[in-house]
Length: 124
Length: 110
Image 1 (cartoon, chains in turn orange, red):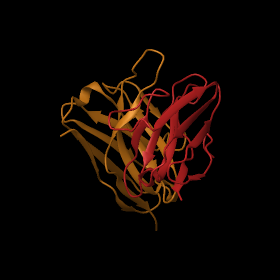
Image 2: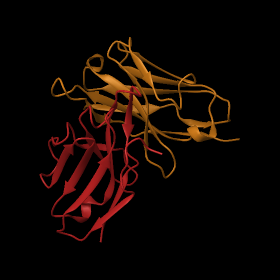
Image 3: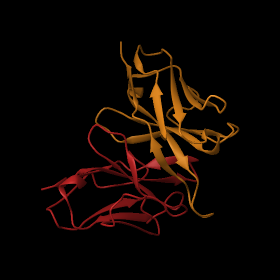
Image 4: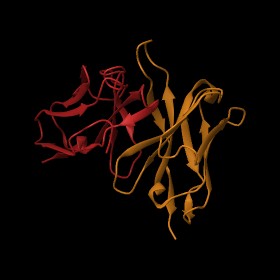
């Protein structure tokens, strides 16, 4: 079955760290760019970070740049998000999302496969 | 404040047609294709429209996506109770070098 599954969420104090993992199965993980997207309590979706197929190109949202670090292990079909200096406003559900390639040269991809999400709560 | 602007809510009765708008700028919608995601309560989002107007398999043809200039829209015809969900538009922003989402529109079927 084609799926991705996040883990590693939990309760952490402000200023603390947490490492999220995303395990992929049922597809060739190394053929896809991957993303992290989060959703705060009762709020909308916020893209966090993107990593290309071999991990050589990475992008971050301004809200997490310098604090979060995305990485991947294609041999282990895994995606990671190292979160440092966590803030209360980082609280939310964190989703791992696979990015399908563009269907044409002038298009962008789409997040065609999502995990069920892992909850991160930053509170004292 | 989201980079892409959507109305926070929309509603309609069964059988009606509803359109959800998504407004951006030249660096995002004006330069790139748009995707739409549906999120049912308590579940992960699901892509419903990609590349402006393409439907993944399994998405009813009642859902229609369009883009013009720096705006995009999602039209749902023949509204059904199962369409009640949150809908998000999204695209890549060339200036921010980031994926950007709209704030989401909560669709209520009356």
